[in-house]
Image (cartoon, rainbow, N blue to C red; front, side, top):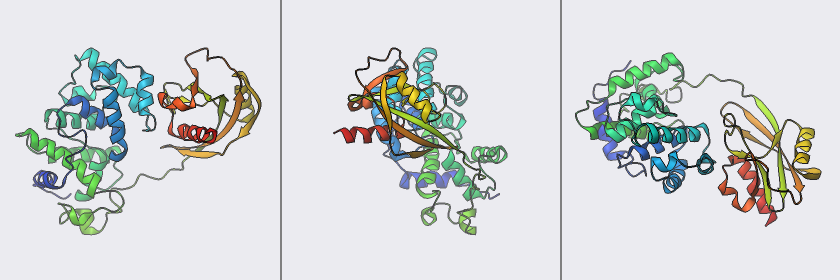
Length: 352
């Protein structure tokens, strides 16, 4: 494996000149803001996160505000960002910090990693950015940088390969003499992977490691890191009920875990006949109207959705907290999955 004794020095120098310095969660040691950004950035692009981050801080300016807020408020603000277990863990973590840690985030990596939704790499990032800790991160961007620069073979998600990367990443850390250097190094790893050493077309000409990078020198940028072994993506099918009562639509609370856990969604059924029965049970009358079917892709499977439109007249308010008649004009108040929101927006547009 390639040895670069000046890796951290080069990276810090590059980051200070060419790295990102004006992201909303930078230039602060506020652990709450840093934690919030790190959770949102898990498997999500910066450009997507920025508006969500701003809305969360406006609604939940500190950890206590988030900890004691209704979970429905949290899910509503998170709706559309995906990977909804992050939002549930975010809420749980804030409550643990508020009630068990005096509303202060722990300073140590191990203690941070014990909190809900915070793994080893995220804990290290929080400790580094908030407290200047000498800690190793290893997210997707960092794995790509290490695989290419040092020529690490194998899929990074494989435990053996990941362990090799953790060992290498720890050996590359700069001395902890100055907090600013540790922070610049950690940010530099993220910046290099996000801006130059990207998946598709890495900008090797501007990379500080171009002369030594195994992938660049050998022309293997497309081969490193090794791709995930391909698996057949299964397809599932569901029928969704868009049941209207005037300008309101029936929503049903999803179970706390699983697909869209904890969000408000449209009632579903396994087939057309079962969906008609669901419609009837909620006061629907007449035949269901076929709407345009569509497919939503998750990480591990595809979901074919067959939506059907029904009408209910003068139905009383839902009898429990698991169903609600939601005004289409106020759908923002509910945490609704992105594909359902798209369907309801189209429906509302047709009524204007």
